[in-house]
Length: 86
Length: 145
Image 1 (cartoon, one colour):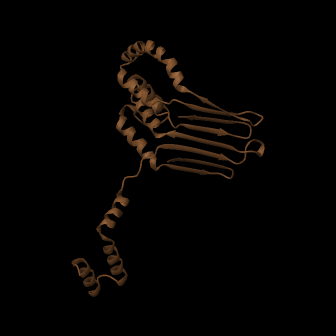
Image 2 (cartoon, rainbow over the protein chains, first blue to last red):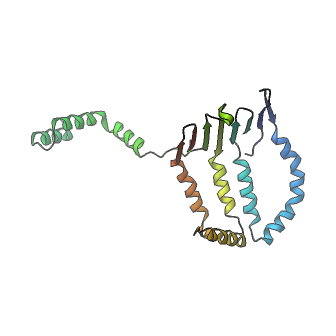
Image 3 (cartoon, rainbow over the protein chains, first blue to last red):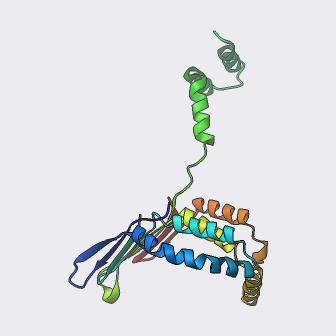
């Protein structure tokens, strides 16, 4: 299953932490028409490069799906950045 | 008295085993076959594959000698697997370029010889990977969990 939610946390100079929940599923919905339009072009490009387009799409999908659970947290005395993908 | 117990006592009487060994053997026998099979299963049982690759960096002394820096990254192992599968999609001419560049850097590795199953095995072996770097103020840990 592809990621559907992401949390982005940022701390400003006043040491206030802002956490924003980003509904990625809305992004997928917005990108879907674009993907459908670009899909034939991608097929042609992959065929020209002699790459199996179905295998490429499957791998891309797996890559997208495996993003779930990714957690990146960096902080120092001045900054704090958090990204968590659900 | 069953046959196993008799054998143990005979071995003890003939001096083939010590009293301690006999005692341990009898105790193991009393636990029964169920316990021994359970023990074998736990010994030889398959390890649960790790789900994440963790990179943790802790720097106690930040800029200007104050504060601290912390980095905590958790990457799903599935992402690594998908990544290596993606490497399998690299077209042959691009692989040739990459090989050439690596040869120039003195790395004798032919990427075209890498098969997806090899890469899968490589990722699986990462489960035993642990890197610990300890400095006076900095600690870096890379491990799987």
